[in-house]
Image 1 (spheres, rainbow, N blue to C red):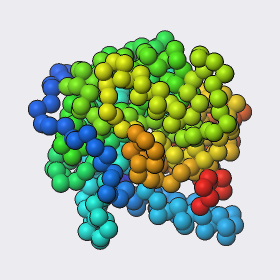
Image 2: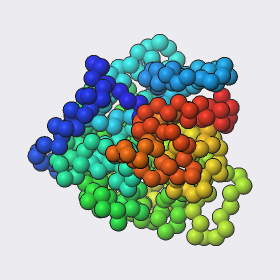
Image 3: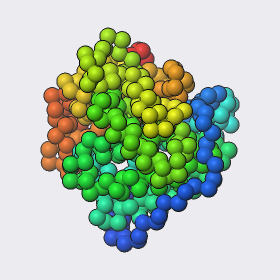
Image 4: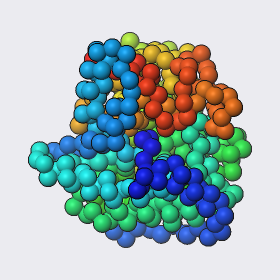
Length: 396
């Protein structure tokens, strides 16, 4: 998530907002069934272009290229679309200006433009890890703040741009953590707020022009036969609370992860093995959803760093994994049921720091698979970005 600011306030503003948030005692609101029609059950990217975020280009420009070849690859990179991460009370205010900028790109010609937003700020965020811990907390009024100062702000901006199609990837890792990590104290404490928070977000953001993709982790996480049925049951329950399965377009998979879309040589050795790649996982997930009555959904696969398969010693390693490369370029309808390949994770942004003394240090960021020397989550990790471009498949 690119670190953004309003009026140059940057980190100071975010820190001040978070500090104020901890003192709030406002009660959370009940979840109301939406009265507006949902977006139609179609691929929102068909006949459109993706939004190219100028902030991504500015971030890439800060990376020093060791060789002319590296510099050429970085220059090419700035032209590609990436998701816009709204991951704090402060950055929620940038939804409107981003949509305005998308309209300017559209006015330059070439057809309609669809921005992709990642909405990522639940209380006790990243509950099973430390690397991307957020500003809101369950025991400090986080649910009410999430509703009134985050989701409601974004929803108002979306409603003010009714002519624009908008895609949303909603709360990476949140519901998947309730499937497999509920024994972690911070996840157990957040369970009901995660459920209500995601349902509230869907109910408020589900507008005729907004296409929501609920995060569904990846093949190596929820693709296991023992995990997938629990996941689809949880998804159905949350969607029912939000007003029904028709309130979302579909699901996003492999967000910030490394699984390739298709691994031709991969084969299950038995029925207890997980899905072997992301397209296989989408097929398994769609079949599982159909069993609980959720059908007709489209999927986004994050291909921002899955160009090289087999780079991890275990699928549980997620932090700045060495050997990763940019994957398939953002593309509309590349396979059946896949609405898009898209770069959801911002290429080159760190997953977490290797500094053991840091407040958000996570042990996974110093695993044997992790690249050394990483800064805090969300900050530019220039050597990693350069490796992603070198290892890109297809090549840049």
